[in-house]
Amino acid sequence: MVERVVVGPWKTNCYIYSSTKKECIIIDPGGSDEEIASRVDVLNMVPVGIALTHGHVDHLAGLRALRDGYAARGYKLPIAISPADRKFLGIGAMENHRENLESLGLDEATFFNIGDEEELPKADVRLREGDRVFNMDLAVLETPGHTPGSVCFYSEREGILFSGDTLFFDNVGRSDLSGGSERKLRESIQKKIAVLPPETRVFPGHGPFTTVEREKRGNPYFRGMLQEARPVSAAPSLFALKPAPVQKPAAARVDGARPGATATHAAPRKAAATSATSRKAPRKPAAKPGRAPSARKASGGSRKTPAAKTVVRRLPARKPAAKKPAAKPRRPGPASRARARRR
Image (tube, rainbow, N blue to C red; front, side, top):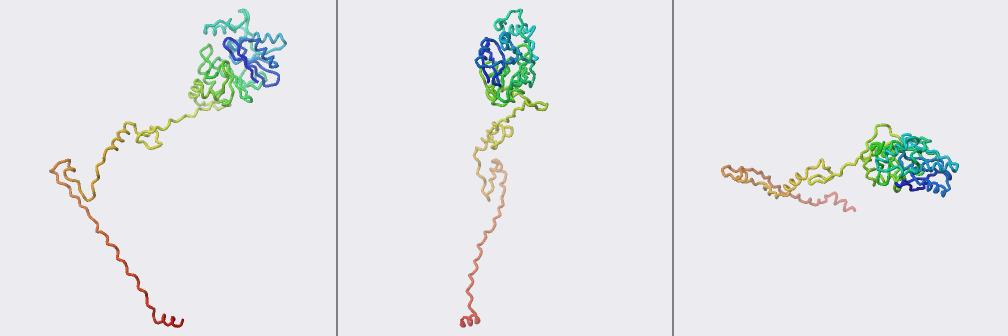
């Protein structure tokens, strides 16, 4: 079960996910904590934890209020995040968020409803490659690039991927903020997402849903990254990149080239045109046998050069073979006549 709640000023996709009948997890509560809790109640589910795809403010702004609200109701919600993004939680986290927001010309008051003296809650669970997320059928895929600790959550059984801000519909995550890396983002998409089954449904951190197959075909950033992929020298793993097939250029048809020949084996177009023109020139009639060319033609018009004599030997015509006379009937001898009388 996947339920989406769009929250915060940046329209972040917060997801409520469950692979059981009763328990669920909350992914990326970027704001609107009351709306998220209300949707969980409508679904008649019990949350068992909060999982973050990365530590940017628009994916965890509602974290503190949501956790405190459920604590007042008697539910303890542990918070899970990659160790590389732990700096966005706990003591000193607000300063890191202020730096990112100032680079974008924004203020933390736009996202947080806490005072300067308050801090964000700390992380309780560290998410690493291959870990299960709160005993759900979700596996952690480490996909750094957007942030150092960006992760995706993948369910092989359900065929779904929560991609955070690594991959969107027709776009990919930005890598120009603090800790971002375009090279690592490319590697993450090539080695972790591109190798998933094409029918895998992708639930991004912003915008509409998509599939791996659709992004391979239509996402210009995704397609460009795959074309630049190179085979890795290490032994292939479950998520190893398969090198993209090299497409040979189509055979170019050039005038004068034989059918099926490639452009590298064919003559240039200009030369081919010249040869084609020469073939169209009228041909001189060949000299008939038994007649020698005149002296003027052979010498280029000079009368002093004697004409060369050509000797032609003619074979004698064959006479038709004489017909043999037809054989005359043989006359019967005396013995034959005597046998004929007895009969």
